[in-house]
Image (cartoon, rainbow, N blue to C red; front, side, top):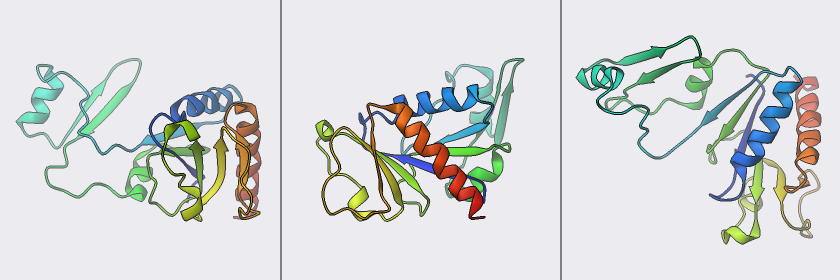
Length: 173
């Protein structure tokens, strides 16, 4: 499987802000990064009166909308099961790294973004797949040694950890 890292955390923890920083830095260094964002909500991509939405609602299984700037494929599942992570990854173009947001339950390496102020319990104590935590407080005592503890307010530190993590994963293949 290609290089994949989940970025998880509660709403408001700063996942998207951290991802924006990581993506900008990696892209500036020539690293091709894909992102898959999972949502439990119904996704709306275009107003219902637009041609592509009308064609999709009329029965098209997939509609591709293309321009000189980007394209999107919108597929109606129509009672089909949600695609697995492996199926979603297979639809993406090749990349050096794919970052996943919102795939909390999948058995993949994960970076948890955690802020005490969000008022929710952290996920890392109960998920052995969380390999690093970017948090706004000091590392608690008693954590497993293999869990990297990073300062979410120092995104360069998170970037350095990510580069090292990817090197280790590449050499273990």
